[in-house]
Length: 469
Image (cartoon, rainbow, N blue to C red; front, side, top):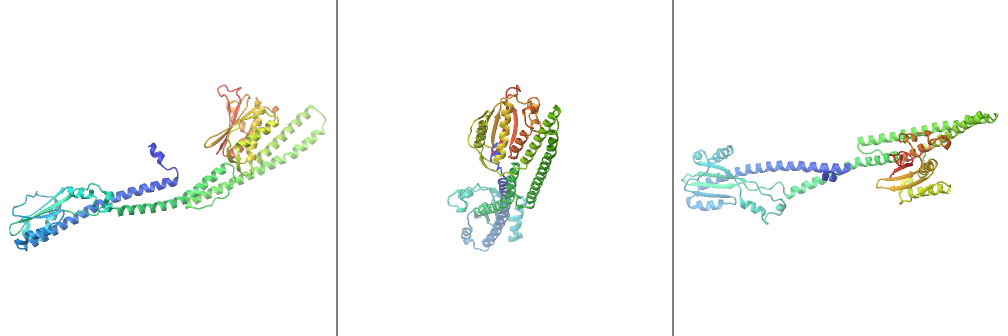
């Protein structure tokens, strides 16, 4: 079964062609078997009736020929597979009571006349003829039978005996002549041509089906990576064209929904600036007090959240085009920039890996992760590993880590963990949300893991980014 699973084609086109070929070969094999059986039965039927007619003619000729010419007449009637004999004693033929033997006897008496009824014998035996099989094995057989030899089934030997008016018995032993087998070279040529024509038609039709499906699969993959997808060509059978049309409609609705949401949130964040600025001006005119300082800090926090929300929305509607980028060089230059700014960032260089990405967006996501690692874990160490299907980037810090039950919750917008990442450290809680959104829009994933899950603390946090290659 494992061997069959490995040999079974993976693609729809290959599977359909293989199934059609197997079905056609099976159907033609059964058809040839049935036709061969019918052909052989019809050949025997006609040949044995020809033997009866020929024997009746021989009896008539012998009856009308002088006895001095009987030997010459019999020699003239001899042929391969059939012998005639004139004898003065009654031949010992087993009595054949089969319905077919009775039918042959009736045909013979119909030609000879009723006066021969008491002196006619008919017997049918199945025998093998070694000389016939040897002929089929010999190198002198016809060229179109060289590759199709197989042991032939036994033929029925017809034995007929009639007592002539002179008292002698005319006896013959004959078998049906070999006919042209159904499995000849011409049959194989016909089947091969039919198979090729069927494969050509199936290939043409399946390409009409698989070509739109392949484009649809690529478009769905690109859509999952945040690329702009132009409307696909709606072609192929009606079912396939309806599927492509539904995808185009879905893509249009998604683009409209994202655009409307982006515009609404951007307008809301922008409009919040006006009342915040007015409140700040009124507070500035107030006398200095502890209450005034608290209100100013709250307004500052509101403004930061408004600005972060606007940045988040802009990122959601980012229309940056994708292009091939060496991720190893991009991550290395980003680490160098942060090191020049005095951050404790360490970079383990890897092999060049080129991916289709939006470089500005991806660099922003990686920068957020590196800055978080330095801010909350004192240092950051970045590394990159590549496999056949994925590129994995890991950013490790030396901080206290995050409780296991909070590892997913920190990706929610404006969500921060008070115990280790309080407001005193700065930030609005959108950095990880923006980073995950960017990575997800590239078809990848962003997850957080404690370096030592058994102890849970003191081993640092690992931010793992996986991008499809």
